[in-house]
Amino acid sequence: MEPKFKPGDVVRIREDYPARHFRTPGYVQGKTGTIAAVHNAFRNPESLAYGGDGLPRQYLYLVYLTQTHLWEHYTAAQDKLYIDIYEHWLERA
Amino acid sequence: MRHVHDRGGWPDVGAVNPTEHNYTVWEKRIHALMRVLTRHHLFRVDEMRRTIESMTLHDYETLSYYERWITAIEHLMIEKGVLTCKEIEERIAQVETLQR
Image (tube, rainbow over all chains, first blue to last red):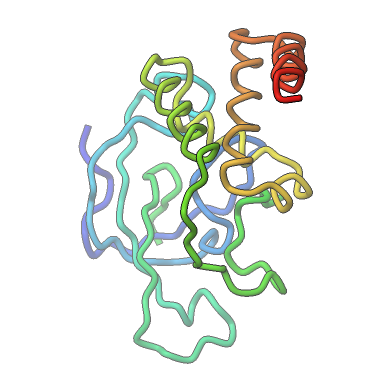
């Protein structure tokens, strides 16, 4: 299995609040960022959290977003947030 | 709906208190208990995290860090059938008697 995205790709983080465990915080959902790095493929914590085997493994990416895009009153345009996001939470922007 | 732990951007919660403290014996024991239980595959840390995140807002806000851990461990031991509520309650009563 190959990663779907590569560094430099622009991605949108999906907006979803399933009634189960997930690792994508609300404040980045629906926002657009850029892939900084592909970490690796890991067992899916959304399955591990219920005693599952976490398979198939999911690629985990380091994604960066500008702080001004995240917070309404943020002024330092150069500041970025780096956050780890699993592949099934990302779509091409 | 956002879960209790998903705090980024919540209005009016104030700054995070970054102060460290020297861990008490019971906090160390809870940490050790978690390590022993996961080492013996009784649950995974992901399950503990899910359990903590499922707490009511009141519990999440009023319990300390390791109180959340022990609450989650108790919940998981019951969920997995390792212990029953009755066994835990009986043991607590026993310990309380010993301490008097």
